Amino acid sequence: MLIVHTLTPDRIAPCALQLREADQAELDAAGVEDVIGMLSDALPDCSWASVAEWNGRPVFMYGVRPLPGGEVGVPWMLSTVHLEQAERVAVARLARQVVARMRAEFPVLTNLIHAENHDAIKFVKWLGFTVSDKLTGPEYKFRQFIWRRDV
Image 1 (cartoon, rainbow, N blue to C red):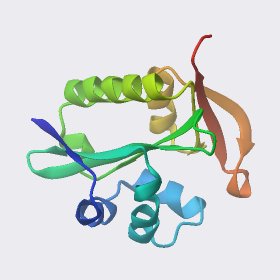
Image 2: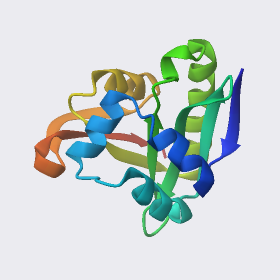
Image 3: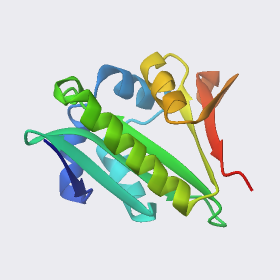
Image 4: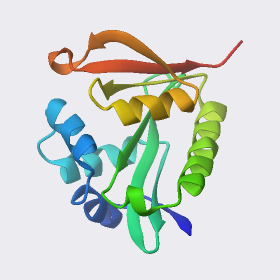
C-alpha cells in the first residue's frame, strides 16, 4: 500500500541516500553536491511537500515551491530505488491527485527536467505538462516543462 507522509527534515535522508540513478544524475547535472542539505534548506520554502512509502520503504518525495509573486509553482519529485517495487496504478493515481492539488493552487507550474531522463519526461507529459525541445539550464542539459491553467 502506498502511504503518504508530510516530508519532514528527518524523512529527507532515507530518500536522498537511495535515489534512483536518473534522479541522482539530474541533481549532479544541476550542480547539487549535497542533496540532503539542499532539500533541508528548500523545504521551508515549499507550499507543501510529502514522501510516499510502499511497504515501509520511501519510494519518492515531492512538493511544490512558489516563486515570488505566488502565481507560479515549481513542482519537484525525486524517486528512490524502491520506485519499481511500488504498484504502478497506485503511483499513477497519487501522481494525478498531487498534480491536481498543485493546479488548484497555482495557475502556472514549471520546472526543469534533465534532457536524458526519458522516463521522467514521459511521466510529466502523461501528467499533462508541455515539455520544451529547447535545451536550457546548467550546461544546457535540461528541458523546461510547463502547465498553464486555461483562463
